[in-house]
Length: 210
Image (cartoon, rainbow, N blue to C red):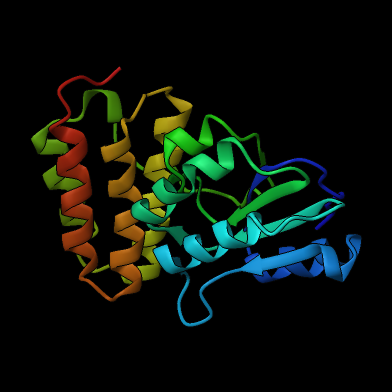
């Protein structure tokens, strides 16, 4: 992956967090970088948010880069970071690294520029008309995919979100969280068919699809 040194706060959406760190860290002096992540899981929790905030308020005479890593970021963790992300102390630069755009709250995503560094893999187009989804479509799609495994289900979740983005369908914060929650549930070995059912019914029951 080709990645340049980042000199202002950014959100990086990547394929692999560890690979990104491997390419990014040599660009900085070690004493100027702090990596905040959950070493036990891929979730960025409130504990990590508190640690990042505390680190941000330790004064520095030169740029200090605080790198926040997580495949998913808990809502409460992001809310606790809002103030320091919007008004960081002098010389503090935040770099958020995640594998999913949907894991970042719109309130943060709209305030910090992002770089989409994910390699575009061949993406199977799902046979669903999202803008005109009806119960018959949902039933038929679930019936065709009732025996898929969790990795296949994750690809479907990503494909649905990709199609929504292409069709310029606006999702509110709660609806975006359903996508990130779906990935989390699949990682926790929830039944793929149940996760997809909940996701598609959420889309179906939207009051207004633009």
